[in-house]
Amino acid sequence: MLYLVGLGPGAPDALPAPAFALLTGGLPVLLRTARHPVVQTLPPLPSLDDEYESGESFSDVYEAIVARVLRTHSTLGDLVYAVPGHPLVGETTVARLLERTRAEGIPTKIIGAPSFVDACLESLGEAIVGDLSVVDAHGLNPDGAHSDPQLRVSGPILLYQIHDRAAASHAKLALMRAGFPDDHLVTVLRASGLPEAKKITLPLFELDRRDHDHLTSVWVPPLPEASRPSDFDALRRIVARLRDPETGCPWDLKQTHVSLKKYAIEEAYEVCEAIDSEDPDALCDELGDLLLQVVLNAQIASESGEFDSDDICRVLCEKLVRRHPHIFGDTVAGDADEVLRNWNAIKAQEKPEKASLLDGISASLPALTQALQTSKRVVSVGFEWPELSQVLAKVDEELAELRVELNEGSPERIADELGDLLFTLVNVARKVGIDPEESLRGQLKKFHRRWHYIEAAAKEQNRAVELFSLSEQEALWQEAKQKERQ
Image (cartoon, rainbow, N blue to C red; front, top):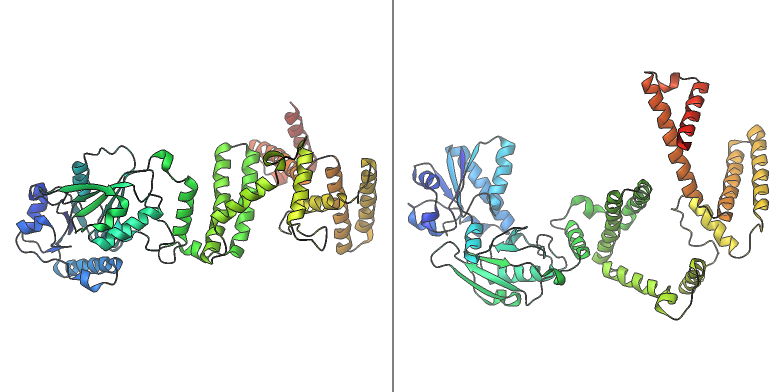
């Protein structure tokens, strides 16, 4: 058995009897550190403090401690591993040990004790009714370019392992990157749970101007709601963390502007699907996924110094103001059509002169939408059938040509004529003010609805759909149409 024992926050009388019994009962004991007040009241016990001298980083130290505890347990059998506070609160070595012991089938038993969190809250006289973040200062993002998502400005934070001025300086800068102003008042807690406990409140910028030791924690109250950065800032911090070269997500780190193209298209379509479903919750969720594509591309660009999300917002704000002179200037626009004409005129002035009227129509758009934009472009310079009857006559003409090719032509010629017919139908849609993409989507929804009706009827009769004759399927189709009209 591997016993994971808490030493409590420091006061000897806070050490529970079961923990004391294990520490003094004759089983082999390893202390993570002997730098703890309770240890001074116990018989001499071996500690792992020497591991702190050999590791290049705290992560290396923790891994070395875990490996040593497991080796000792493997050699000696039952073992007591004792750590400050409660073993399940703010104790990285225990968290890693539990991962390993579960994976390797090693039995463990937790022997709890009051944690340093309990002692700190008692010292502060604080009652926690919302979210409390308990954060290891050693685990904060070391990269000054990114803020750390662990440091939320909306709830209280208790930082531990502020053991010297260097750790305090690192924590101070991380808090400032997270959005805490330099004059935000924080409370330094030393030796909480001991008779000599002290606390002092000071502005954040003074945090590293005082000496600290291994018994020091820092309490950071939340920002007042009116002073908090926007949730967009939190999103940016999370995405920055996902792209952190050392601690980020392998998938996010692999992404480039090019690899993300397909996701931007997919998310835009899913937004449209949520709109069609008339489900506000789904729309909120899908808009978030689409926003992630913007922020992720902005983060990638910022890493190479091209632009960042602030630049995107700035350029967009400038564009919106510039293209709405009827709102932000002296121009008058009587209706939506006039607004659109002004917008396109201003847009044309902003863009470099194009070699072709059709330049700038995205090839990534669905074909029907590309066709509609192409039609609108050429119509703007007068390439247009004046009357709808002329467009419908063109539909008849293209349909006749398609019939000829269906009887005599090659697949290439049939595809060519079918394309002509489809493009002409797009012009019909434009002429009557209908978006052909949306029109086709509506038809597909209707088709799905009626087909589901046929499948449901087949299920009721305990027959496969393919066993229905065409006339039976058509009869059910007509039933579905009739029900829609009722």
